[in-house]
Length: 219
Image 1: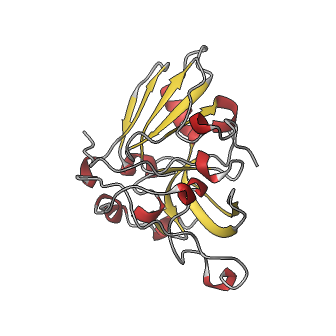
Image 2: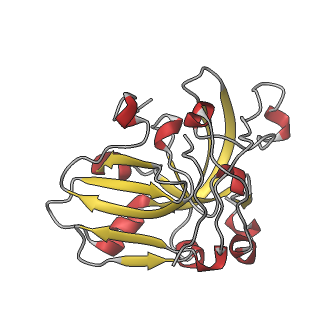
């Protein structure tokens, strides 16, 4: 069972990733601000040769707390034939994806990073959604932060559950131990600190979407 504090809401070379590092990750701090709607809060994490071309990532002074990282599991449920509970090790045993992409923030800046993870489509193969499943609700342990996605967007080959960034384990600043990532969406759709993905028939809302941000959030 995943335990958390009560923060405020935030807005390829796989061989180089040490699995033991993931379970040792502890997330410290509190909530976040409107700027975190971009989905970035991790300082000078872009590759050095590109740092002169693009601004550094925004760093949030506050992050949610994961009390027991080793107990973390991703729950997959809802309209599925096979509910799942997956550890980071489980995810890393699935076919990996790595790509380098330019991230665009709704506030007008951009940055480049390489992401490592497992395609959401691989999770879909394992859980076998029912024919009535049309959406996925991605939920964070960041005090109720969530995003609803349509199934077609979630199945895009570059939509991944990211456990690494720039050839390193994902850090707390970027949503460890697991976050949603896709170059087809704006940052507020890229849920960090994932704890569950639930398949639904009706379209879920989302933290920023319920406050008037576009639901689809595509680029």
